[in-house]
Image 1 (cartoon, one colour):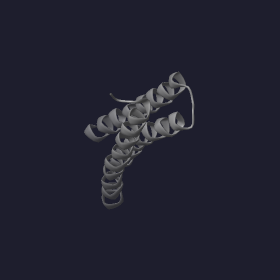
Image 2 (image 1 turned 90 degrees about the vertical axis):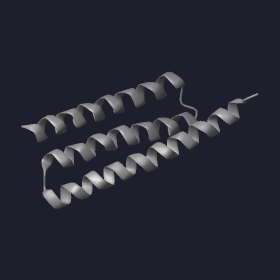
Image 3 (image 1 turned 60 degrees about the vertical axis):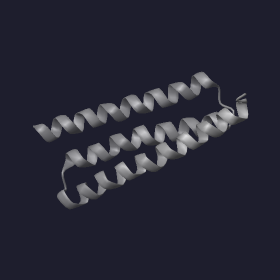
Image 4 (image 1 turned 30 degrees about the vertical axis):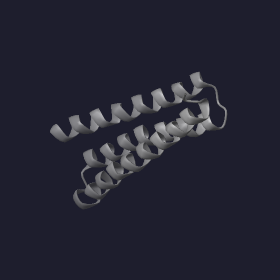
Length: 95
């Protein structure tokens, strides 16, 4: 039987993985920006940073006892902003 503590541990592990892999994507996009000075790459890095950090902060908020609806709202808005910036960066790169 899976307890609530087990689920919190699994959530923490998933949040750590999101932070690590998202951080790698942000790093490579940022590195690409520094080489090319392409505004689209900078926006791509910023978009993925919003997605990554939103997921991370949602996990942190949950661990500190913030209500689940608030946590989900924080994560959803952060992801929405991040994906908007990613789409904008892709459209800018194509133009």
